[in-house]
Amino acid sequence: MLFGVDVSHWQKEIDWPEVKRAGIRFAFYKATEFPPGKTDVYIDPQLYNNAAGTAANRIHGAPYHFFRTHVPGVHQAIAFIETVRSLPFSLAPVMDLELAGLRGKTLCDEVLDFLLRVEDAFKIKPIIYTSGAFWRTYMIHDKFDNVLPFADYKLWLAQWGFTMPRPVYPFAGPSFWQYTETGRIPGVITHVDQDYFLGDEIGLLPFLCLNRYNNPSKKESLTA
Image 1 (cartoon, rainbow, N blue to C red):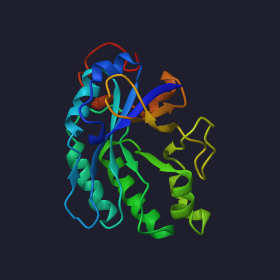
Image 2: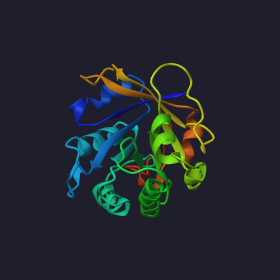
Image 3: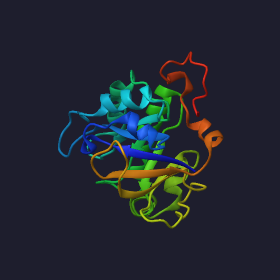
Image 4: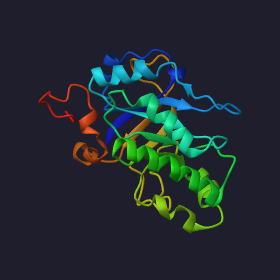
């Protein structure tokens, strides 16, 4: 397994060289959301620092969008794409799915609209972050067929504790596992969410946007 973190402005300014020395191999960092009742995109104040810090220290990074349902999924995707398009991230981008004012097929359609638009922009399937409880309650809801379109996407599952996560339909299993929200690591002055990639360096390769990595002419392996 590989160790990672996920961060936002709540972690304040991060010492990414120190995080790298602590053994962190990947990081998800917040990019955007549409706050409740707002139709203007909010950009996380630490987005550009975190994108630059992970890239400069050769920590695989990916931006995430916190999805809400009061703005159409396509509009959220467009705002996210325009915000992160120029950033040097090397992992597939992420949809953070944990709040909803919709459920069932209506919610699934909005989520899929977002994912397809982001996939078209970056030529890689986004990663879906969620919990089993949210997925079953709001996405599956009343019909397992609602979630069949997501079978080919990769799952980053929130399940705190040290019991290996259970499969969530229709995913074969999680690829990333957020196992705590109260981690402490050198380089971060606050508690921080910590994660595992449930594979090795070779297993991480399908998640890499190799053509987006900063300094792509460098010869060293991106998993080194």
